Image (cartoon, rainbow, N blue to C red; front, side, top):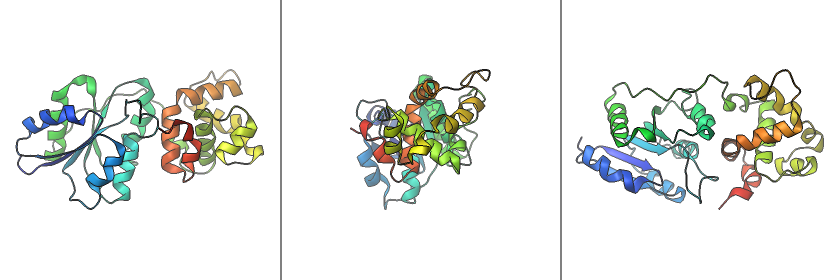
Length: 248
């Protein structure tokens, strides 16, 4: 495939590049191995034919401050949306990320999702499929569950996401701190459980036969921390104040 333009956005881009170069002889490859390289790779440049994108960044510097959803949003901001293949690790903490990245209403440009455990041949197959218009590999199956981003997009959900991210940041040990970190009124912070319990119950992540306690809400926020912080920094202009503990 001469003149094929591919972008790899992954800490492992250097490992993947030789394999893709051999599979697509004559292609142009650009590698992004750190978030601060992304703008230089896309802003003002010709569009790529496809992007291979890590969904979550499993490295000690960026795993709490950057992920594939950040990259997808950045492509839109600089008007460089293109066909995307998402590579996931397959861990349970990625499920919320996967539900958002694979939602065609959120990111129709994501045409294929693969698990890294499938190996390098799966990467080649997925990229070849999306650039030739053939059906891509079947996306990883997830348990049926309402995606979090559907709850957080408007109304009370906007406040719920800010409260949840504040708890997930580890900086909201009490309601006064929660109000400060989430930039909400103290009365709103005191209603943390009423904001988040309906979401937790709808997703069947707490027994419906028992009241959802504050402790259960805090535990739930911890379990979903990576996604909650990702959503907040991408959707709340003041989100970085919430996640400052996790910034490198």
